[in-house]
Each structure stands twice: as structure tokens, then as C-alpha cells.
Image 1: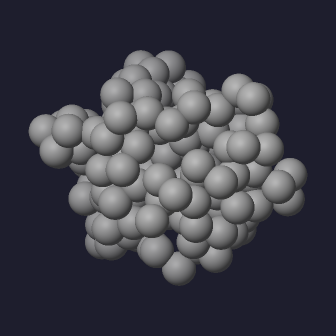
Image 2: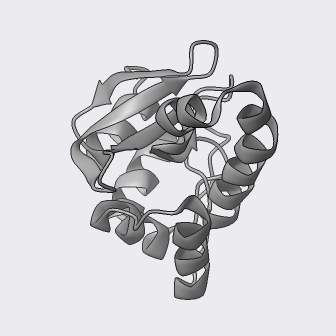
Amino acid sequence: MYRELLGEQIKKVNWAQLQNPCPEDEIAEAEKVVGYTFPDDLKALLRETNGDRWFLLSAKEIIENVERNRSILSECLEPDEYLEKVDRYIFFATNGCGDYYCYRVSENGEVDTSAIYIWEHEEFEARYAAKDLKDAIIKYYNDEL
């Protein structure tokens, strides 16, 4: 489903590129590093294309992003503040300007799949961006996100 959807969407641009499916062990490693089980739709996306070299991050890029955040941002914020403002999100896409599209994770570790958020790096805050992953992809490639 996602590969076909992305294939149609990226025809509108000349910089995005579908990637090979992500191996299951890389998805498992990304979940381990992030610290949360990925939602089914994110796993399905990664199983069909491991990023698009533009908007959607690969499993390795998800890991690199988390590690970078932990090494830099955890030193700038108090531990509780870091947990609330940075670590309770699963970042899976970027706008290329330092902001990330993500899922929000509750205090009990449950992933909120009712919405996709944009996490803004200047404020360390997230706001609603799309109703789900499919909606986010369509909106992004139609300049609506």
C-alpha cells in the first residue's frame, strides 16, 4: 500500500526516491534504540520502503536521529524536560529544516496513533499535522503539510 502511494506521490518531485524494503532486524533495532514499539503503519511503511531519501527516514536514520538527540539535547534540558519534550516521540520523517514528523507516546508507553504531529525544534513542541501516516504522506507531497 505505502510503496504504491509513495510511487504516485513522488512523481510530483524529482528528489525523492523509493528505497528497498527495510530488513526486520533493522526495524527491531530501531525500536530498541527509540525505546518504543513502532505503530503497525510505520512498520508496514518500512517493510515496503526504507525511507525515500527526502521526507521519510530510513530505520538507520531514525536511529541516528535518536542518538544525536540524546547526545546533544539531553545535555541542554533537565532529564524530566528532555523526556517530555523530546524522548516521548517517535520521529520518522523530516521537513529538512530541523523539524520532525512523529507519533506521540504517552507516559505509560502507549503510542498515539490517532494523529501525526510535527515536532518543532525551536520550541521543542509538537502540534497536529495529519490524521495518520497516509494523510501525512499525501499532504507532504502536495505542499499541504
